[in-house]
Image (tube, rainbow, N blue to C red; front, side):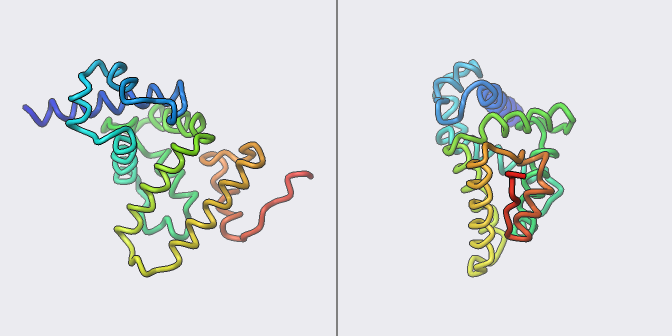
Length: 185
């Protein structure tokens, strides 16, 4: 019974964060906001998570676990990997996968894409997962993260011309060819 209560509380906390992420940027969200939205005590939050960063990390780890993509595939196809997580993830803790849940993930990513604090926690979590699964002496992973960061910064400079999820094919092509398209045409 306690396990069900724990899972229910975690799901409520995660759903509260998801709702908040649709309304405000991650950097502006506080633990107080989360506990008020989840209608729980602050101490209850800290029984499950260290802070809001740990909450996001746990959500991402769940999303990666539910994805059909292997973490090892991130090294060669990072944009397909990111799209897979978004498209196949359930709505932040629920066990059923649906188009509505996938749409929620997409909406959150679109809302948070300019928040460097959110992007940093996402990339750090993925790096942590990748480094756990691959040989850490493999320097290729560092080049993958470097290229990914460069492409994300370039996309940011161009007003998010490419949507990270919907335009994964174009972004993956930039990653593969190491050439940015001329957007002035």
